[in-house]
Amino acid sequence: MLGGVCAGLARRFGVPVKPIRVLAVVSIAPAAIGLLAYTACWALVPRTGEDRSVAARVLSDRREVQIVLAVSTVMLAVLITLVAIGVQGPGAFAWPLLLSTAGLLCVWRGASDDERERLQSRLSTTPLIGAATATSWRTVLLRACIGGALVLVGVALLSKIGELRGAAIGVFIGIVSVSAGFLMMFAPWWLRTLRDLANERRQRVRAQERADVAAHLHDSVLQTLLLIQKAASQPTEVVRLALNQERELRHWLFDPPQRHAHAGAASFVTLASDIERDVEEDYGIGVELIVVGDCEPDDALRALLAAGREAAVNAAKWSATTTISMFAEVEPEQVSLFVRDVGHGFDPDTVPGDRKGIAHSIVERMARHGGQATIRSSPGAGTEVELVVPRHAAP
Image (cartoon, rainbow, N blue to C red; front, side, top):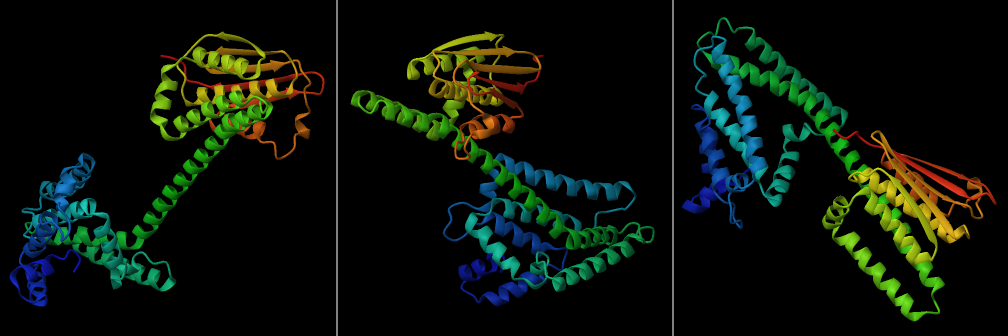
């Protein structure tokens, strides 16, 4: 009923499905041959409505093949270890169970999304297996009792290794029983822990992506909207700004690989010079740039440059000065960038809460990449923004 093999055989030969299922269960007894045959049919015969079998999907994916081979190798090592410690012969059930387990793993890794969803739904309704993933106190108690019983049976069998010399089946069943008992008791907790860690990692990545998008929109789109407002009386300039912003935003949203490749190909000095040119062209204000040293920018350095661009744009918009100074220094341990102006200045403690330029585009952006932003300003004394990000020394 799990794989549909018996139903497929019954349909193929035109016979009722129940006798086929009874025969399949009975055939497990002689050395697990029936289980091996069932698993082989499940893996090798394509499912109705699908053009490829489970085995074909696994063989077409190198990573899945490596996983199946790795687990099979571990199980094979267990059998070889039994022989090495003096247990003669792996037993009649050992090899069919080994091959069947590898086949079932192949089925799980290579099943289509629809078949995997059906398997999960069917397993969750199975009395014993379904209870293994439930969290109510009754199912937890049942799981603990069954797991404890399996461990006791396995320990009892393993304690008779000397008496079973030459018959590995008792040892093998003991190992399987102990392993199944521990899995029954602790596997749900392990799975929940792994699932929680994966969810937390996904949420953290999503939060960082949202923060990066918000920072980029503030740096790019909102600044362009401000320029459009200032050039409202010049239709040609408005169209030029809008087209440039649309092209840049499309490139940033829908072509990230080329964007990162292009950014990675440029040097730190080149990217800093781009900031100088863009601010001068967009705001008609002079930018004095000095860069000491150079290096290939990584994500942290690109974040530093983006924060420096935001600081320079803020100075161009609000300082009412004619010149902005930018000084960058590339050192083996860190990279520093200073943006200074001698304009109006402001009190950082009185910035309204709805103004997110400094908080999101500068301070939080630097913190996300392990750096630090320090803003020194006071009314009438200008503003200095210090940005520092650590880097690894070049070999």
